[in-house]
Image (cartoon, rainbow, N blue to C red; front, side, top):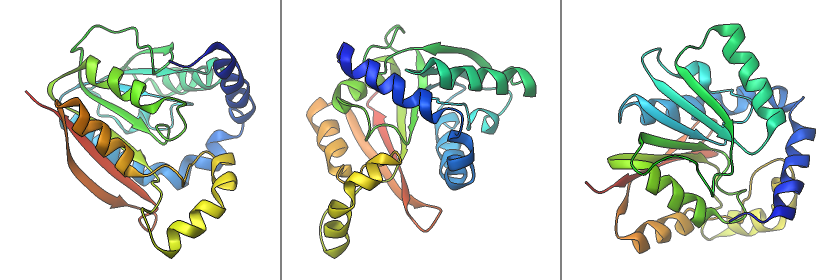
Length: 213
């Protein structure tokens, strides 16, 4: 669970990022975000987008979807709501301030849960993943789009050296995909069913983790 001090610090950081977030990330993350959205809606219409931010991906969902977005930052969500209102995104059913480690939804609510570019930044990612699993219907997917650090080799060494810089722009090269894979195995209820490279140049990868029926 994210403690109070960490929550305050994170909200302040997101408040600083909110005005320029779209300019920095929109085109860079679009292919990966679209892939995550497509994978999520393939499970069914009702999707939770955890860490929805400024709502960059909300326009990628089909109109028959039912999207629920949550984020820790009111400043980010304010910009997401502006997109919803301006573009008439009626498939977005709610946007709420919420900690992803304490989701205010009933068990088995969603066909899919997607988290794009945030899981490596959550102070306690396993707790967030536990919550994603809880609110997910049996047979549904957790869909993660992220940059994962290389497990070994010369690239991994370089990533470790530049980790502070990567974290400053919102990515943690020190966070390996194996951490999520290990979590899935420990649950006994989740299985990693896909891991594939995405544009640009494979920097981002998509991971699907299915909840056993």
